[in-house]
Amino acid sequence: MSGYLDVPVKKNCYALGYSYGEICCHCGCCSDDAVIRAKARIQYHQDELQHFLNFNYWSDDPELRAVQEKNNKANIQYCRNQIRKYRRQLKRLEASDVGSD
Image (cartoon, rainbow, N blue to C red; front, side, top):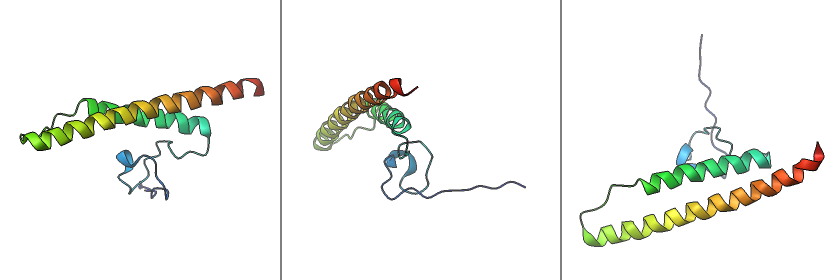
């Protein structure tokens, strides 16, 4: 006998792009462990960045296309900023953990 166990997302799910706000995908973005959480969030934003860099569903309408380009550019910048933020955070966490072994 086999079965499936779906777990609902936490109240403030970080990775809505993965879970769509419905079912937890156990990505680690909400982990209680700060190192796991930082690594998962880096991966999440790298995935999102690739999505925006590969975006190719541009509107034929020039005005809508301009809005899309502006939004896509902002999304790319946001992802890059978040990746830098969580890499710095991870570096601090790992540096503080070095002396605890």
